[in-house]
Image 1 (cartoon, rainbow, N blue to C red):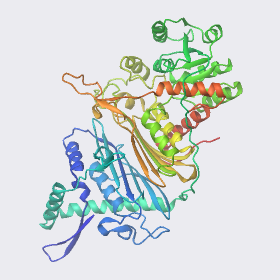
Image 2 (cartoon, rainbow, N blue to C red; image 1 turned 90 degrees about the horizontal axis):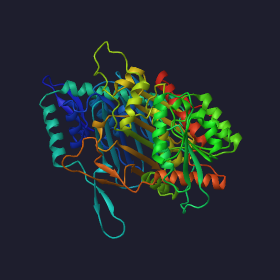
Image 3 (cartoon, one colour; image 1 turned 180 degrees about the vertical axis):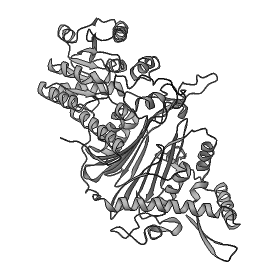
Length: 610
């Protein structure tokens, strides 16, 4: 921060503070896009700031300016200049003061991690995380602004050049500070010294201090755990091998939600689709979709689940009906001694999740929840953590934004129109693949897609979530608003052993990203850190007349489907566990349930672990 003393006309002095981060070209561009209305209403802001160990506090304000001299056990101000910069930036972009604040701090003699979670009137939210545990060298900053009609991403990860000096290439950060930044900051200083906007600047700074003091109180009133001592982390590792053994006869038990699960399993030579089956009383549109899948594989469609499993000697049931039916069909298959691969989400009810775990364990069959844990970038992150490259993971931050539309945007329907029926809309949305939450009961993005990033969290840490705090909003789509479910959410997660994590998730609309969405993993460890873009490796494809909905970045080398099937085959062959078995899937479901309860109550919620 830059602190100025302004001499007023009556010879009194007035102290004002300037945040130079506001004048970084990327931040200025984002503000211009917001002011022009191109991004719509701010829904979520996420800020990452990671600094090297023992890095000096720039600007000299420190904890004493904020806390009146209050320090933590190492004598460091609870909130220092980096936090004030980021708080100021968030308040500047949102244009409001928050009405909900949650914060978590973990610290030891080597440094600290702090997460701030802000909720604003109208549904906007912000996640800010800070670490000073990086090794000596460069720091890292990232800012994402998710609006109702667009999004902006300013990330050091995307702002690097390559230097080749033998051995591996080294990424060098292209600094945003420079002549343009210096001129902008100096212009602001000159304006204030001339007496322009002094009152506004003072008010803004007072608001930053007011929010920061509330954050300090939240941190000091809680009981944060110390960072756990270094231990080995149990991380599932897949040993790749050529497929061997006899094939598994598979039945697609309803394919009305996503036939891509059955198709994905069928990419592996050990899994042979022999029949599609469903209950006879399901609606005609369900029978039609099932028949289409059966026709494409030239296999029978049987309108009796149990008969199909028996008569076709099925080894594996691939379950992908409406969400409410996931557990019921999976349990019925398990009771007949059939292994189960199920689409997400696990269920819509706690009791069903308990019944499923009991049925799987009593019958001795294997279970796999379809997931994305074998995407190349996620595997690379797992391997880096398993190799100890960054030491013990201490904080994990997950962004999972699907850039998909869901019908008309929020606020586009005239008053008096009846609310959009959830199931009817999703049945129609099947044509373009945007029917992820198909079912009678409306489900938001946390319930539908939360398994994916929470699966990453389990893969990278091997830890269980014990408490969550969450905020959510129906920010983008009328169908979500009409049915009272979230299309945008932010979650703070506290895990066993003192590990902390955050999740930002949303169906943010096709206009927000040119290639399906931004999915990133940020992992801070005891000896380093990882920043992982889930879409990499990718190839950019751009051409004249390109359809607007076609992705500009194309994923390559993605064998997720094959590797999931291979993992399941190994679990069956060796009587081992799959990458996401029934108990792990139940734990993720209960974490999501706790987050949704936190959204309803506005309070941190303990995760049910019974």
